[in-house]
Length: 302
Image (cartoon, rainbow, N blue to C red; front, side):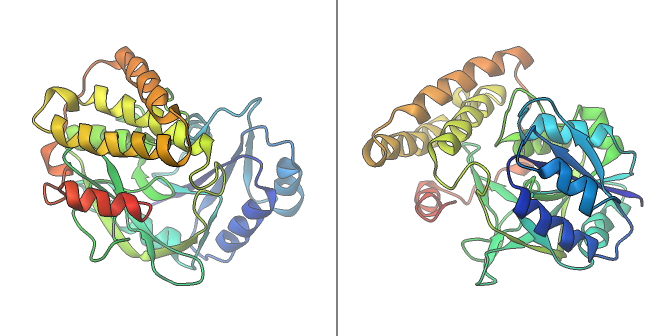
């Protein structure tokens, strides 16, 4: 299966260089596509001069994660679309390993395994969802639970399935695109798989900044968007979702003294009106994640 590796980037020249060097050391056949969100930090020059084998797509503005990925996907034609964050350094064999499960006709998305720098502990092995559609890094808190979908930082997708459901929704600037796409793929009848041999080290939050105001705003927007699109507050999961979100918003008020997470959720809720309600595939949700388990995940960074 031919593979396009798509890497969106913004103002992360040195980090991207390390990412590309790791991919160069991976002998897997592939085409690497970097999408630069108007970085203005020498990123484009780096790619042109030091990595002539890489396809460079230059955007006129910072269009966000989802729009950048969609542009990179359109620039390629590989049967497998492999997404790698610019702050992930993959191990040799990553691309072959993560694309491998797509040989099974029912599989449209595959989760790679990222680790925490310096420790080797699992950062994420895909995404798991609670009944309120809150997303958590699968495997970070112990044995991996139910796989809902891959995380966009280390994922592979079947191109034909990706194109059939429309790729990432560009209403989401960053965060939540992978959850939304995974749910739409499942609703279309596809399944998710995992690739434990597809490994990489993930710095984490390197672009927006871990727990930065910008990250909280973007995550809040995505949360409100998903709650409305999948009808969570009109379902039996509403009490669970409201309890989890109340804790997140309260944390923002107490620690950061800002109502930004709440305001961002309202904006995301309004933005979700454009696409109408989408079905929520029951098999994507892990009912074992109750309020207690959700709180524990929130305390340790999901």
